[in-house]
Image (cartoon, rainbow, N blue to C red; front, side):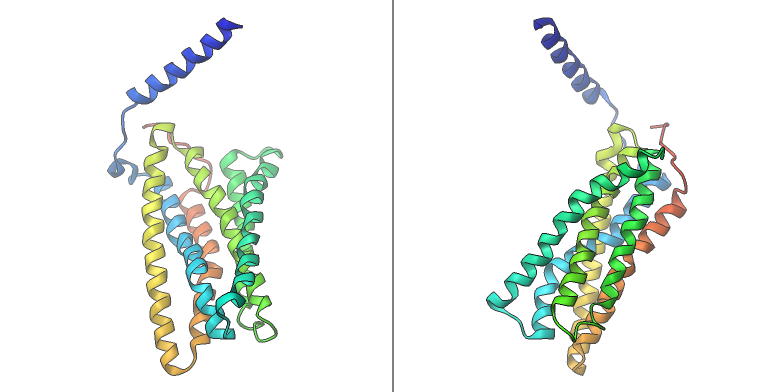
Length: 237
């Protein structure tokens, strides 16, 4: 038994030494792979959607329905609680396809395509919002939940295709792209809201932004699939 424990410690030491001796891969070299661009574009297109939902929804409920203070707390609590479903379900969903014989990357991409369809429901948030504020809250909640499911899978596409020593760097590139996408979407939203508020049609600004958020995932998935049409692991790093 003691020998078994010591052997485990020995293996852990060997792994640490391998990690320390592994040659670091530069961002410049990683940018030469389509797989890097696929991940970065996916993050650029979708990270901003989450930040938009996170920061602009209180303003939306106030502008559209005059809600503020404690009255806005419960709808937002419901909406963000819905995202837990996506976080959990997003990890399980691709396993369904893998059990059917799909390669990990292919199973994940198939799951991500289906996940990308759910945010399209956000398109109905404004047209149906005049009935009750709960309609946009629930529809946007579905979109936000889908984002969490998407996010759970897009990160693992990197480890599917890249060797361990470069995974952190590729995720860093994607994180930067996601940050830039978030800034761009927030700037666009602010400009649209200011413009249409002056015209007295603030709802038009939200309609445009919700439309962008709704289709962002399908656009991201399409470009990712075009860049990496099939499972192509990187073997020359």
